[in-house]
Image (tube, rainbow, N blue to C red; front, side, top):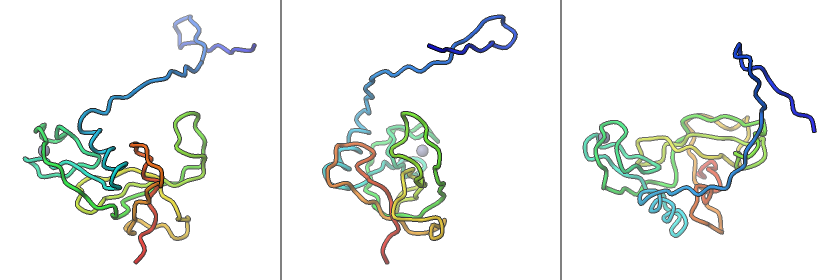
Amino acid sequence: MGVTSVELGNTGTLAYPSRIKLPCTWHVGKTGSRFYKELKDSCQIWGTKCPQCELVYVPPKATCPRCFSDIKEWVKVGTAGTLLTYTEVNYAVPGIQPQKPPYFLGIIKLDGASTGFVHMLGEVNMTEIKVGMRMQAEFREKREGTYLDIKYFRPAKP
Ligand SMILES: [Zn+2]
């Protein structure tokens, strides 16, 4: 078994690079729970609207990160929006990618939202993808109440 150690600067000590895989459970809270249930049960995307700044956050937030107000108002936003930016992912990173590269990631400003929504893009290629293009959420047939209940955003049909 070959393990390579590395010097830790000028500390005179060694470190062994390693990986730990741990099962974990994230509690998404009341706000996250409603967001994911709406994706799963109704293929709808909901955000929350700050009473002070009137920004609509998607994914929703219980507290405004800008003015720290409690947010109670829910707003249904569109399942379509405008592509703000994108990148093509070409490198595999163990454990954290939703699919095998290459694929596109984008930030979409959904209709009615104030913030960008990060997700995968599909049915696009490098020659046709453009900032400003209209994108539409494509939901999976079998949904489980996760972010990936949206399969990807594809170009909206006119
Ligand atoms: Zn606010």
